[in-house]
Length: 191
Image 1 (spheres, helix red, strand yellow):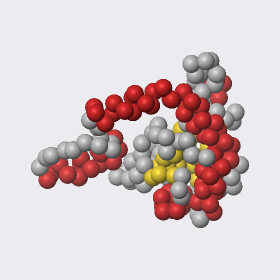
Image 2: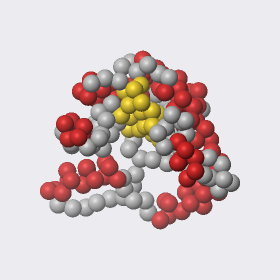
Image 3: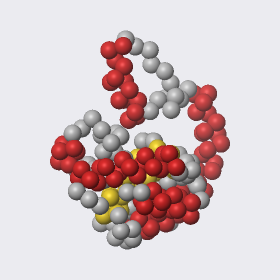
């Protein structure tokens, strides 16, 4: 996250909410190395991230504390056939992406508490997971929308809008897949 905002005090809280959801803008000099050195390795990084995301999606699908996993690379995904048709890489192979979403078991209030407990545990104890609302990083990012990006929305409104209180989003990075699975498993053991 980068950038600066200088404004009257009355804009402080709305700007913090905006920054929390959208991040800051990097200066051109800071963004340039990312473009120069990042673009040439993008294909190989995404391939690794997608392989890891698929492993985590399969692991989560079989976990007893997880009610649902939404990942276009799973054959159980409702739009799997459409995803296979539309989500292809430059060479024509299936490229379901590196973002997955899973929902914890439990009634709404209980599932929300479990989601908060899981991400708090990961933030404090995991080496491979970073608590952040961003996407597409080389690090694996974890977010609990109900208590983070949508925290200002009452639980009843979240439910009516289709926001799962026990939903967790992962943007999978380049870490070792086994370490990611092990840390996630240990985090799930805590809830």
